[in-house]
Length: 634
Image (cartoon, rainbow, N blue to C red; front, side):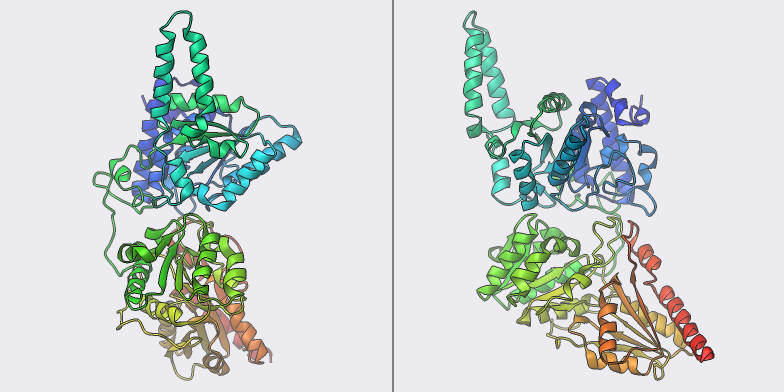
């Protein structure tokens, strides 16, 4: 009998026996594996919390009790149990279920997440709102030990414990974030004198004492008091008890009965409680258990072998970046590699293997990572902070105050710039050009392909100023990698194509979209449209001479960028043209519109924004029609 088919809401769990809950866990795990193997997604983290999710929804009453998931990539079981089972096959597909919690998707998703370490702070706010309104129920934050390395999580714990917030924090301790955890907090949580050893010792001692008549129970109580008073020496609980939390655990996160007991106890305590649960990432699927980092975020794969279903093609930008940095570091001992819990995702695992003494994984601590890099740069080193564009947002003040204000030569290598696809709005890196180009002293460059990435990385390491290098997710354009990485003149662009005098349109962009612009211009040339295509390459400083020359003879100018159009490259270009009294008759900006784009295949999202050859052709034709309409009106 299939139990999952009868679960339409969390309340349906409460009629199940313990044995049925354990059977349901296997059915949920099988469904996650089946869908993720077809659609891709975050597999290892979701497999690791199946029993935890069942125990939470069995004990608490969502949505009356508010469950807030940190990051949210582990919520596939949660989605299956909260009325979305019939749509689970659409996971991460355009128009389908999101890969992260979405408040507009279900009343059981209480807070949108996608970046780490926000759950405790959000749950503190939710608990306070419930208190002010006199509402029953509890706020529950589920957070991983990797996310606990971020200062934001500790700030939330500090407030919750200090004001005795009626909050439950479930610490999912799997000794992993995306890659292996680092740092003192992780080491503290991973102490081996916890879990089954202490628990079994306590039980065996009590059972032995109870075997003695008359003195058994008093002795048990005495031992219990002694164990409680020494708990700080035996468990990680002292850290959380010092912050004002009642500490329960550690508990085996794959024993539903143990978690039901712990969660029930926590629910009945009207004060801050932290339940420490130990789980195994990838639980139930041997390939993911063996290599949880590889199966953190995966594309479609073969369930039987665990092998990805990939087509051959050009190397990824990430791979080219990693290999180039290793090459350049061999010639410059000052180069230091820094990442925030993502050596694999950023390509720095290559650097770490070759130069371990010059590699630093700071954990999920982007703010610290940037100030750490600034400290290195202040002492003459050349730190390269490789952080996804969307996560670089977390360290904006540090970029301003600690890097740019001191004009320190820190390289910001921002992978996943632009539309990243199925991870959706929390992960699209479409704001960096806007939030960086206004900063004094900063150089900002966007390579059009994997070859140019190599040369711009060499340029960044040769520049005596902060340098932000932004490149996309996925495979490159398939261009040849020409020679050794060479330093390019800062602030220079390149003309890629010109038909005739280029009097009809100037297509000016940054990033891989300039290749699409060239395709569009070549197609338009067959119809007699005179077009110029410029790769500006640098968003700051702009190649003013090249850009003004391209615009001077064109009736129509179109800027192109895989970035929010507000404040991005197009805005920078228009500011230049306005300052030089060179604004063309018609100017159009093509990029990401003023809204948060949903998840979907990157190419489909680009088509939605008009950032493909056909879209650019359509924009050119509309612009030319506008020019002719103005001429007719004149």
